[in-house]
Image 1 (cartoon, rainbow, N blue to C red):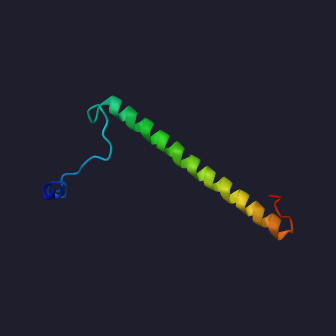
Image 2 (tube, helix red, strand yellow):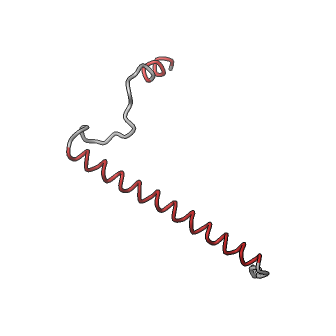
Image 3 (cartoon, rainbow, N blue to C red):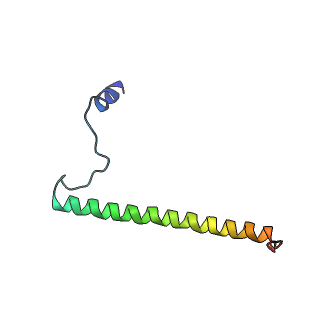
Length: 72
């Protein structure tokens, strides 16, 4: 176990992602671009969901401030 720690910290950098194709090939570059595009879509979806939640929360608080309370 200590051998693993020593080898990982000895300056050899492990790649974050590994594809089934060799590094630097056009197919790997295409896969990387696809991965980045999917990741950015997921992140923007999370931001959009968070904004929707905040909007609903603010609307509810504003209605409560105006004296309207939810019927639930």
